[in-house]
Length: 219
Image 1 (cartoon, rainbow, N blue to C red):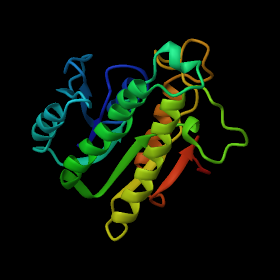
Image 2 (image 1 turned 90 degrees about the vertical axis):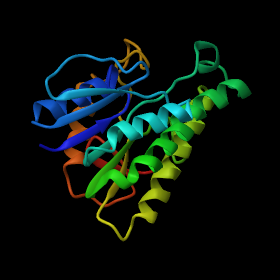
Image 3 (image 1 turned 120 degrees about the vertical axis):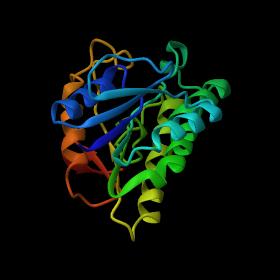
Image 4 (image 1 turned 45 degrees about the vertical axis):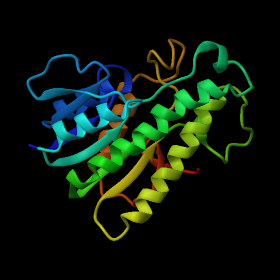
C-alpha cells in the first residue's frame, strides 16, 4: 500500500485530498496543529505546527519510519480580514504568513526529503494569487501573495536541485475553493482540486512545473 503525507489534512482541500487518496487505496499520514482529525482505518494523525521548529522535528521523527511515496504540502495560513482587504503590508502579518506558508513548509520539506522514495512526488499547494504573470496584480492580500510567490520559487529551486533524481516536484494552483479560507462564495468544491492533485501525484510529469486543472500554467 502506497503512502501519502498530507499536511493540513483535517479540513478543506487537505481533507478532500486525503479522502481521495484513501478512496484510491492509499495509506495517508495527515497532520493537523493539534494532532487530531477525522477517522478512517488507513489514516494516522501527526501533530504539526509549522510555526514551531520543535514541532516540525517531532513530526519528521514520527513520520520517518515510513517510506513516503507522495508528500503534499497543503497546510497554509491566510491573513486576517483587516489585511485581506488592505493594500498596505503589515510587518507582523507578513512574518506570521511567511512563517507558515514558506519558512515552516520549506523546513518541513527539507527535513523529510530523505525519507521520500527515489521515485516519489512532492506537491506544494500554491495560488494564482502569487503569480507574477497575471495581467494585473491585485494589491489586496499582500502578505499571502508574497508567500505564495516565494513558494513557487522554492518549487523551482528544489526541482532543479533534484534534477538528477527521479523525484518530481510540482506546485498546484487549486483555484478559488469553498473552504474556511476561501469562503462560501468561492467557485470550486474542495473535491475538484483534490482530484487534480491525485492525478498529478500519480502521473509522470515534468518536474518543476506550475499546474492548474491538469494543465501546465504560467508563473
